[in-house]
Image (tube, rainbow, N blue to C red):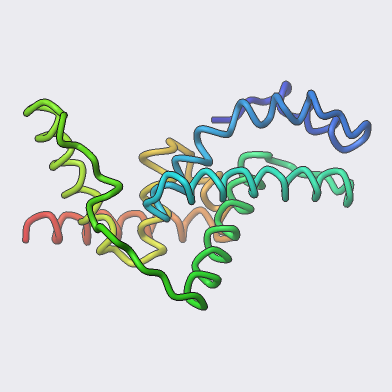
Length: 181
């Protein structure tokens, strides 16, 4: 996940020269990961795309306006994404939504039998993950889907590495319990 020196060089160019090409390189390196992270949390392609783009707009604004050093862009961008998802749910809680057809987004009628089976397994897994409390969901997602280190997750969530290890262990136990039910 860590791009090392190249990432630090891009960050330096963005902070000092407000270089849009350097930020574009950071965007290219992280957009899929941020989109996947957000999509898992909101469950809608369109909303995930909107939130992911807002994440990078906010990151750009922060980097060029504040000029503060960012030690890890991965930690920074995932923290921004997490905050945007929280803001999304706060705003969603204040407005009322109506759906005409609950299966409108699914649209899997033309999928083959094997693909439908795979989708069903994935839906079961996502349903089981969604039953975990929010903290467990985030840590499992960052560790096993985004393949981040314990230290990176600790930085994103603002917790100690030991706390992340313990929480990850508890999340695994709870996930196993839910899967067995």
